[in-house]
Image 1 (tube, rainbow, N blue to C red):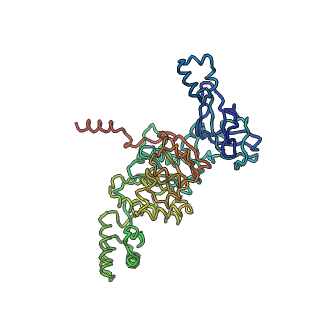
Image 2: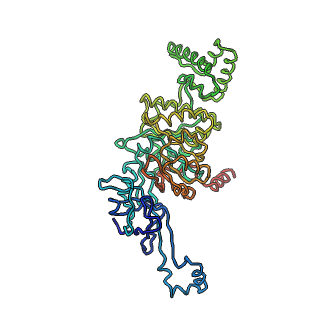
Image 3: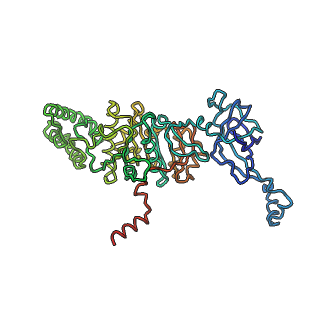
Length: 501
């Protein structure tokens, strides 16, 4: 190890197996330690190397502990410093919280005995942190460990197999972080293991991945396809009665049963003629059926309502089976679609189809990234909620992963939120959101939770299955161009005025 940066001291009620204090060694023109850093203690008492996080820093000077002494110091205009060594009495204390101890066999084990007063403290080495935090050198590189020269490379399986939540207030850098995540997935080589990436882009924030210039080092545009919202078409022949029922939640079991019989007839006729049927033919069959008039009337109204969305056709556009490819990204750009209901129907269809294709092995393992997730799987009812909850529960069995992005975690379905086992938090200030995070996360302590309110743009807290211990990171710089929506308002206003003058 390098030179020690502190020494464990005996203080009231410490050291214990759960906390200890240390005096920080003075280093000229340098700040040797910061809150959140990882430290190591070489101690014979713990039979190995103890790894801990710095939970607090305290600067003290016993001369200034007395109100009378401070008053006298001020009265002398600082001249007492020539008589009393006030600067030499100043020292820095830090509080450490043990994570575990690295045993002689190299395993991280629970701390059951405290370090001893006088034990030397060092900054944890990069090798130690890779081992202790569960980082993978060939994993997804999100950036740098805060206050350490260690790249944060997360293992693909640990990060995605049990789904991911990216949560923060508006403007904290969610989309930027997600773009970095997408870049990392597109940069992976076949020998590292690759997945398909599907992005449901509500505001057009990721379409810049499909643009390129001669100066770009990485040509993400060659691996990215953008599907504009108005061109999306849902294939009626691929829909079951239960699919239609999810679009119209008021449909009763009797209506679903009647509709199922009609769809069977249409499929049988289509199989004989070789001609697929559309929504108009389905409506016509409902109209000609002998079902109860009131049941028929309600069903006709619902189907006319679906027809007015102009989302349904004979063929699927784009063909998901043909367009979802390993190592590539498909972006569904919904910025031109205003209706939330239409967007929820699209999400319902896409996730249903993708999940079924994946279960049959017809498309590669995929990561589905959903922006504004609280709009699609809220705590209340939503057309797309049921299938998202299904994938959250069952997707990992078929290597179908979710990444849900939201600025209001308190509005997300608790069922879904409980299944997102890897969490990436950027700045969060809403007290209700913070309370929910504190209650739902088993790995985040109060100190880390409090830190979420003060994170700078580009800083994040990673916790859950992706890492062995919660870590603060600084997100790396993205390689792809920034989206046009990130252009400052002043510049957009000047461009508009110049164009229209």
